[in-house]
Length: 497
Image 1 (cartoon, rainbow, N blue to C red):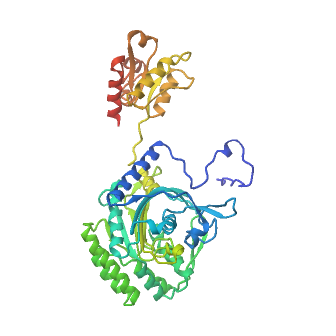
Image 2: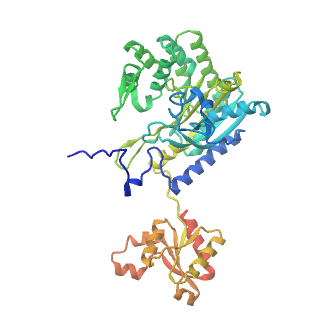
């Protein structure tokens, strides 16, 4: 079988070739849009209940304000999407909601309550390779505390993250918030001689891929490097086999309970000052989590968690969706990480010159909604009631009926196309309409409307054997006095929700 010829990206596009969306920028229809909006509402309700206030920053930031905290590099368009403004300054689409918060806090620090507790939601953009559940444009929903030192503030974020996951729709045993601290990571990396920043960051990014690549894939990235399925090669950290073994031993020191993991970590990281500081952090977080009443199943200490962004300085945490499902091809799908955060005490200091403690957590709304959609937990929304237009010369009757329904608070539309009865019914089906309403000359003369319950009609039609029987039965269809139309339609619509 011959392989499909790869198209020349520079060739001029014509016709259907022009209708294409850029990779990582998905189109979203009503069901997913509403599911994401509801998810944001539920998560932000949790943040508000914990005492956080809303803040909305613009989509663009100056590239130099993002600085070295870009996902991949510190130059425009490496990890971010950038353009040059008319004043010749580079501005970049925000790659998360935390870096803009740091800039806002620095600009307004003198007038803000301290600590400053804010939540935010909205789209972010990353100029990186897309993949399953990984987009270049996606929605996040964050909460952050700026100006609060100490592990109790981190523990609050972790406990609130678990509550946010439940509010978003994850049930018992369907998620876990995994917690680690950069202090322990720093101690381990120092022990294997990873002293320069480049090697340090490469190791962190390798460990951050443990859930996707497994032990062998991460071992390759810690060593010489790894080639992915597409043939792209990623250079590794250059550790020797013994050093790789030590890093992996630390990353896999997690146990069943938080207490057991602390004991295992004590043996894995040694007795240095940084190692002891990291153990003290996790011990204090464990005590605070008990005070918050956070179950062991909701939050686990996991030394493999590192978080890829460079700005984290202390505890880091990651929310993982544990649910597995099958895609349309029958393959097992597990989305994995759907949120994360940590402590970033140096981020505001870029602007102020003074260290300002900060900690935060972000729910990846797009990834979480994608996971729920794959597992069938996002129901298709009902469309509007469709009023069929049986008089194409004068649609006034259909327009009046649709207006009457809308005035009663029922979502409704009059058919605006130019097709006949059968295509109009097909249109109502494709719109997901629960009800079709027909008002023609016969109905007007009798003072009635014809109402078709499309959901119930489909169920009844499944049991009908012939077209003649179908035409005779007209499943789900009945007449109602015009005065009863609103009540009868509302009854069907509410039953279908």
